[in-house]
Amino acid sequence: MTLAENLVNGMNNPDCAFYVGATIGQYLVLRILSALVLAYFLIRILDKLVFTPLLNWISKKINGGKK
Image (cartoon, rainbow, N blue to C red; front, side):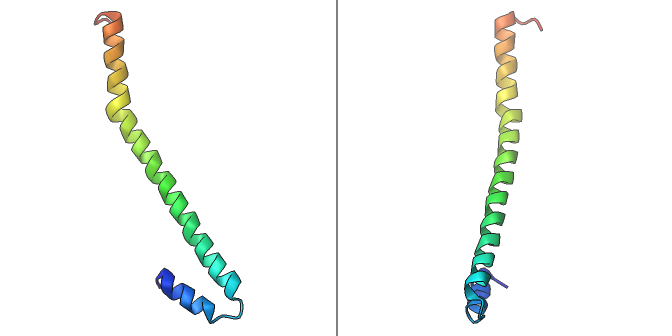
């Protein structure tokens, strides 16, 4: 079922406010969690592709090519 179908079915329920509130709450929690997971992976990729090589390059420049 889609979110819209859940809301329409919930409005025909005597416990409408609870049903619709629970459905929207679950949707928002999943949305927030998926955004956090996506941000975590993007930060990890950014760290591996940008920050680590940049810090290695700075280290080489400071140490004059010696490790």
